[in-house]
Length: 540
Ligand code: NAP
Image (cartoon, rainbow, N blue to C red; front, side, top):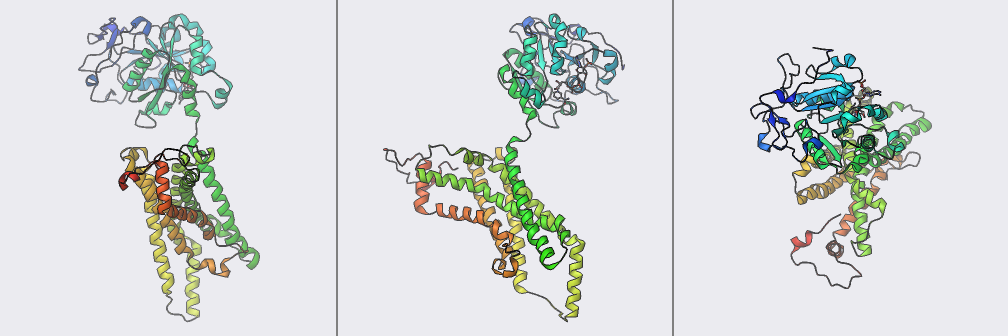
């Protein structure tokens, strides 16, 4: 079957074909086989307002995939809604596979069908562009923007049909053109209805099916009926349509795949900046100082030891930076005596990035735990142990046991594990699927209260690590204090401020402000007597 050019089949020839009750056009198959919700073989112009929409109960309960015993996609039943695709590239091939798997009859229009037919599922018709656009009412335009004008010769055949623009501009093209690709296509084919869809779905996701990758398909068009038809097709293919309004939104839809984790940019840079600073500081203290002052080569510490001293510093400071903006916002509200004045932009942005900062803190803390597990595996650690044992034999010390050190280590490890466990809870509840299953109070309890508990546990973990080291002169290398003393600064400020806001005078005033009281307002304001009601104020 490969490499053949197939003639278009007549959809209406099947005895199982359903007719649209409004205009008599082909709507789909009978209920006992494959069902389709909308009539897609006709253009909206031909169809008028008579799109046939079957109910939810008419949808098949089993997958729409029909696979032959040899694993290839079976022929679509005659009468299946016919869809056209212009272009025979990667996207067109994946789209055709998905459409055939979803029960559509597909006809592909190529400039060279002989060459490309073998790359498509055997049930797909691959033919010349003019032939391909003749019968389907919906045509996917799977070619790049710069080649749109080469399709202008098809204007007459395309008149009145729905053109689905799947294209994605490059970043440069997006900046260069003020009008979106979809609007440009609409300007080239004024007699067609252009719908923007599927551009956010990669060829790979289309081929693999909606189980892999994003399932949402943003759709926009100036014609609600055309948008509805494509939305139903998106549903039939196993994806989730997302109505983005008119074609004027196409630029926004086209910008979606260009984004690279926009909410993570600032938090990631912050984490990287902290890592570089702490790494440099630890390098100076743990590697450079022994080399310069004692002539000892400790550069081997760089890959594991210095990284493992740096990671907890970054994790701990990041965690405190999750709670610092809340403290600053509360202080601002107290000072202004109102909640109705906007926070400065930098604080607003900071508040919005707390989730990402918290997740990066969790990431660094997890890496710190993994590195710590690996410490005894290092060759340098084994040599140190052997050397210590030899030294012990030489100095005739049979039993070394420092009770204080033993306790310090036990408590230090336990607090670290508890802090990491609490942080994991925070990270898990920030997943959308988990967050959606919690009500506002539960979510706020986990993120606010448990998060603060994690910060306190991390502070105790750091303090037990430090113990008395901050007061020992030998710990000040190049007059630089131990790293943990630096990391304690911000978290201690946050914990103290939180403690301060728990004082009755601040707590009540803050609660009043968050329920709408204003310092300069003439309206007298009383807090409810019920303490539970008082607590139900909006928190930053
Ligand atoms: P591709 O592999 O390069 O295919 C482009 C196709 O355009 C060619 O195979 C060619 O088919 C056709 N074409 C029609 N007129 C042409 C002309 N004058 N010059 C050159 N080619 C012409 O690209 P693609 O990856 O399939 O992408 C196609 C469209 O889908 C693009 O707009 C892209 O932004 C969009 N898209 C792609 C993906 C993806 O993952 N690949 C994801 C989302 C959106 P014939 O030679 O058979 O005519």
